[in-house]
Image 1 (cartoon, helix red, strand yellow):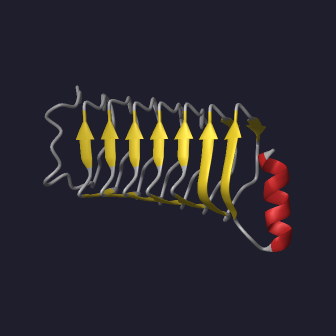
Image 2 (tube, one colour):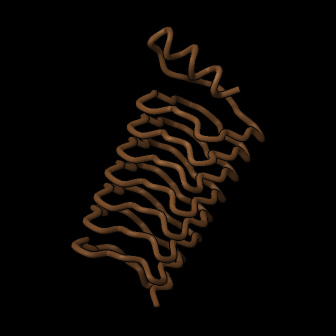
Length: 167
């Protein structure tokens, strides 16, 4: 179970690596400022979990529910979020680098002041999401539903949104 592994890793001053968690449910899990490397989360439910400041590298979130969780200030590198749900998930001040969000449903998610670098968002729904003051660097958006999304003070120069639904 993740909570037990997190506690052991904290005691040892280490991160978690090369693990798979499948069909687990975590309620208010405290996984802040931890390193997660090559972790596979399959159909896991993160219910109002706090993962603030975590470092995710080469991780897979497949069919997970991240709704109401805080991923504020996280770093994602070469990660994939596939068919995930995330109503109101907080990604503020996070950095997503070479990360893919595929088929995700994340209405009301908060990406304010996040950096999306060489990141692909494809086939998902991000209605009413906030991208206020976000930075899109070499990001690609393909067939994404962005109806009602907020892009205040977010430069979109060079970002092709022609296949996206905006209004």
